[in-house]
Image 1 (cartoon, rainbow, N blue to C red):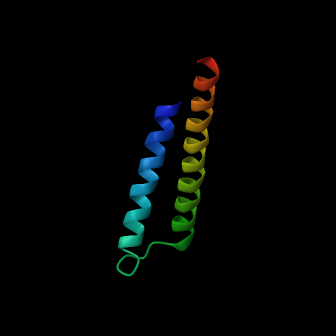
Image 2: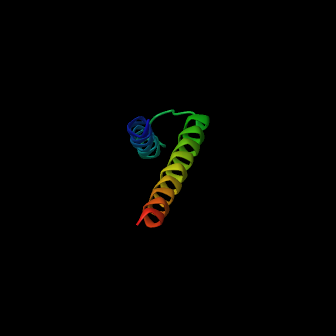
Image 3: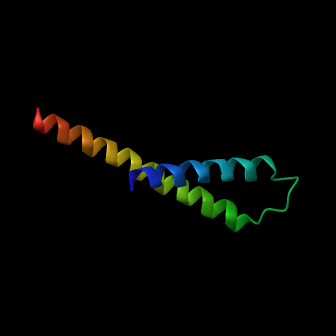
Length: 62
């Protein structure tokens, strides 16, 4: 499941970067950019909190 989150996260980052690069060139709808940004923020927050929980768990076990 964690591997799938990483794949989705990086694909969204790449997609958002392409949409920002071609903002004035291609006709990419705004809702796709907003949706991609929201997914990146959510997955980034999820990965950050997951790593903090893992570090806290490792500290308790030590």
